[in-house]
Structures are given as C-alpha cells and as structure tokens.
Image (tube, rainbow over all chains, first blue to last red; front, side):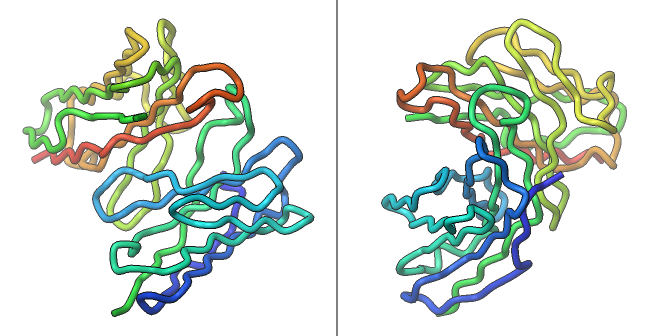
Length: 113
Length: 121
C-alpha cells in the first residue's frame, strides 16, 4: 500500500509557483521521499528526491519538514507543460524489496493560462 | 542518459492470442526491472519484479501463468501476456533499477519506460 496522502487535484496559474503537498506520517528513518510525474499516456518522469534536507534541481524544489512527516514539491514557475499527475512516493534506500516504487493516487495538477 | 525503451508502443491483438512486450535499458545495466499496469484514470499498479537470471516475483493477485516475465540479460526484460482477453487491455509500463556503486550516478535509481498500450479486441 502507498504510504503517502496527496490532494486529488490542484490548479495553478501559469507563471506562478505550484506547491504540491504530501503527507507521509509513517515514514521511517531509512526511507526517502521521491516525486515523479506522469503526463498523459506517458511513463512516469523522475523529478526529485530527498531524505531529510531540502533539495533543489533544475525542475523543482523539495521541502521536507523537520519531523519528515510531510513534504512539499515546488514548481517555481509553472507552465502549461507541467500539467500532469504528480506522485509522492516513500521508498527505502538500497536494493531490498522495500525499495520498490509503489504508486498512490497522486495529485492531478492543472495549469491554467 | 538513463533511458528505458519499450517495444512496441502500441499493440492491438485478437482475443486468445499472446503478446510480448520488450523493455530495454539503453545506457545502463539493470539487475532488477519492474512491470506495472495502468487502467484508464487509475494509478500505476505494480505487477511483478523481475531479477536478471532468476524467476520473477509477482504481486498478490497477479497471475504468473498469464503474465510471463523473462529477464535474460542486464538490459532486457520481456512481459508476455498469454491468451489475452479484452480485460487485459491496459497501459503496461516497465521500469529498470540501475546497478552501480553507492554514491555513483544512477545508484539505486529507478527509470521508467514510455509504456505500451495494449488493446485486445
């Protein structure tokens, strides 16, 4: 079962920051927070991941609370191409069976012009 | 880098026939590949985990005799849907987990293919 809770849908104006929340209150110490997105009829695309520190890359920023029970994915300047379903996933590090990716329902993000 | 391909991208077949879908890691080696299925308006569901050179591990409720998985090399896994029926029509997505040294590029990362849309008439 997925270990995360996300809003079913959100919308954001083009050019504004999109902030997608995720709750993972049962996360354990060796588990990472990963974000993927899926544009319609395509395979999931990796966005970013982190353990406990905030992370930033060319696509997004990931803010993880100090207790690690929740996180927020930030797309700083949303464009129409960012319209997709965004999945927040908790997975263990290493190569054990616990590190396989299990998808929850995700958040359907719509960017409006 | 880290590209996963699937072939074919789309397939239409008659009920009762078998369909093979290939998943390849193009620029990295993957001892483990995963197969997912996605029905319209639903999330991805993990079907099975495929380890190179050994039998696949199927998730609960997935029929191993219907969905045959072969992982013969570090860059290729195949999923064969045997005796396909209309209810097997779905979007099948594979994913490959990279091998490598801890701290190196792609270590433990999982990359997804573009998916194969299967329609069974």
